[in-house]
Length: 592
Image 1 (cartoon, helix red, strand yellow):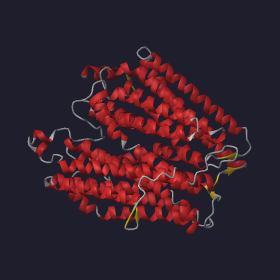
Image 2 (cartoon, rainbow, N blue to C red):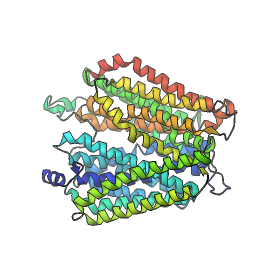
Image 3 (cartoon, rainbow, N blue to C red):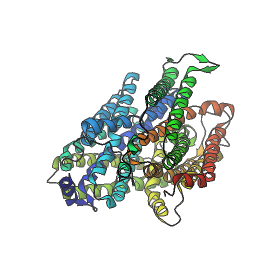
Image 4 (cartoon, rainbow, N blue to C red):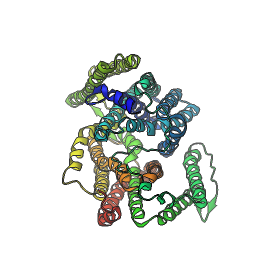
């Protein structure tokens, strides 16, 4: 294996092995397709049946119930996908399998029927499970023995994630809103296919890296300092807290209850099929099921934590508290997937004329062409280093980029030929990726300085910034009449909200997994990583459920009240995090 690693590091691009950039582009095209489809989903489902670009005209509550379940499952299947890769397929083939299944999912959605939509979403959930955990695992294997370069590798890889999201939302969204939904869904599938093909044709570059299943499950997390197995210090420590029969029963029951709720919620609303059609004490079966599952799961966690030694117990309690904060964060932050996209379409003034239209076109041109030119230059550097080793993979990448440039030129020419412009609702989705790319270096320098805040302070600051972003929308919607289905709020409110939300994300998202890896003993990382994904999944589902209340709350209290809830709750939870800072520091036992 070391020979393969050394061979990879012989051909460097910007100081890193060429193989990293093969993974960079694979991830970029996967994120292109994923985010390109994701931004369309709520718009397509809730668009009027009659019009220039008809959708399905679902009630917003129904659309967000389905989207919440879909988004939640995306964070659960990687737990299974990582296990399959470790035991059966290896990381490399898991990535290829995941890409292929996701490509089929995007292809199914082109047909715009209920069956193909559900089939497409199911395939995307399964494919993501194979893909998501195993690309990062390959990076981990590539950099074994070269840990000092790993942070830089993840920074580059993270740029690929955001570049893909940026171009996917911009171009799939543009085609879908201006030409037809099938064009947007289809473009996502085409680039998913090209991403799979270029990785498959380049797989020999990695040698045996990612080829054979590991004997020990490894979950790659940034800044994992648990390099030494606890058993080297205490040979009996592995036996301190084995899963008991009761633990296993609780895991099965809580998992079944959670999955039943996840599937029943959209089925009962969209298809009028209620698997939990009963009442207990005036509470409907769906709520009874999810509350029972949560109680069983909390009992499992509490009883397991109580069986650890004091220091480990304290650290896991700290991780669990951060997990609760994570649920609240994603429940609000992921409104970008639903209610904020609806707000962009129905309540935002997106029609620009005269000088305003020209300024927007120029800004949009710079935003599009600038990043694409930089990434094309990276492709050229990769081609120079690997043209003889993986020529066919490079040809596929070249075709992908020529196609991308063609679509961009067509889009720019089409927009500049018009006197006015109607900014697409999906366009606002690119702001998060743009702000991450521009602000991430500043936040990184902050975390490396002597003013680096503690974990609790970062969480508190992130949640407060998130709440303030919604506070901006509260101010923007104060003039919207109660129960109004449309309005013309200035787009600057939405842009400023996305800026504050991204700043909040930069305080929390990269931090959570890093602290988990530092606080949890090496033998428990796989289990706690699964728990962490579960916390995000709960937040995703909560985001869909709460976002689905937009019509009801707007009708009864006004749109500003809807956004006020998302202002006050994150700020309150953020203040709790800050107040708990001294306690959490003690629980973390000097882990920084």
